[in-house]
Structure formats: structure tokens, C-alpha cells
Image (cartoon, rainbow, N blue to C red):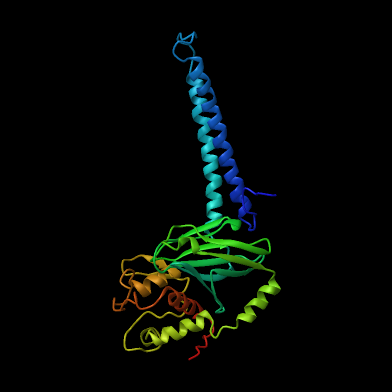
Length: 314
């Protein structure tokens, strides 16, 4: 009977994480033995009543002190640089990733693909394709954790966070919430299904959603009255949103901010936080009026505005 100590490595980052972990563990064990083995020997050798030479030893210690200071310093800094490299690899998603939005709530993971397919506690992705998750929480802190991919990300209420991975093996993998989030925390589990590219496309086609995320967002954009100010010659002079995503935005405080997902979220929920230069702070807050899922949909629509108009189904 095989009892593996660790889950299988099923993503491109998994091997890097495991290698770093084993080096840290091995280094720690080496120094534990180096310190505690002699200490244990000395406890018995120089215990009270034991006949042992306790006279002071005269020897130069400068070189010894330099060695035990410099070598651990370089060792620690080397591990720090290596760990920082792995950290930045994990934190920065590659371009052209497959984008999926995730909302954590007590006690489930709700996922939506850009093409509109929805899932609960399950995620279907193609093998070999980089996948970027943008996550939000509706209530408390959750933590999205796929052990086989060696990725884990805390999901904090009031902000977006991102997580990416590139699966390397077809199969089913456990999905957990790794942060205690309430009485039903242990039931907040699911599966990640990694499919061959053709099977993934078949799964997408079988879903056949009524609207893409951008189409749903466009409908919300109009129903909430946003188009009355931000599109055309409305009665209120508001910043135009066409071509905004990804650009630098000048603010009234003489600073600039990148118009990413986080900026768009804050502009919708906390419009007075970063007021665009040349405009009055007149926009009302939509906090409490729209859900995290609807936020994702509106932002998906705003990201399409530089391109062809999005058809909105009514």
C-alpha cells in the first residue's frame, strides 16, 4: 500500500515549491543536529559530579566568530533570494492566461468563466494552459488551496486577489478552503478537473450559457444607470470608460493609478477614494447594491470597451 507524503506535482510551479521546501527542511535539520547533538553530549559529559577537565581553554575565537557569522549569513541570503524568485513567479501571472472569476462565500466556491459557464465547488480547466483566477469574498476570509498545484491564496473581503497555475497532468485534484471560515468550513471542498484541450472545449460547448460575462455586465451597466453618465452626452459629465482598462489615470491629488480590476472595483464601490482629475466627485457608491459576482461581470464588460461593442441581450 503506497502512502505518499506529499500530493503529486501537477503544475509547473509545484516542483519549484517542493525543491525549496526540502532545502529549507534539510538546512534546518542540519543545524538542529549541529547544535543539539553536541549540546546533548556536553550535558552528560559536564554534568555535576562528573570528573571532567573544566579549566578555561585559551584560544583565539575571532576566526571562529567570523566563520559562524559569515557562512550562515550567505546561506540565509541565498535561500531568501531563491524564495523571492519563486514568490514572484507565483504572484505574477503570465500574459494571455485563461481568466476565471471566483467568489468565496460561506460555504462554497462560486466560479464563472468569461464565456459565461458557472460552477460551484468545481473547476474545469484545460491541461497545459495558464489559468488566472481573480478571487473575491462575500463575507469572511477564505483561502483557495489546491495542494497538487502547490498554490494557496487568502481571499479577503473588500478586495480582489489573483492566483495562477498551469496544470501539467490530466486528472481530478482536491480543492479546499484552507482558512477557518465558520461552522461549515470543513464542507467547503471541491475538485479541479484538468481536461485535454478537446474535452475542455466539449465541456464549454455543453454548458451553453445564455450570456457571456461581458454581456451580463453590459446589461447591468445599463440597468444600474451607469450608461446615463459614462456613455454619450449624458446630463452629468463623467469620465469616459472606452479604452480605460490598463491605462494610467490622473487623479486630483496629482498622482496616477493604473486602471486595473482593483481600480475599477474601488471606483464602483468607493468612488470618492480616487477621484479622476478634471471631474467632480459626484458618483454615488454602489456598495451594498451589487454583489461580488455582478462586480466581476461589470468589470468584464468594461474591459471589452476598447474592442467591438458587446451585444447585450435583454
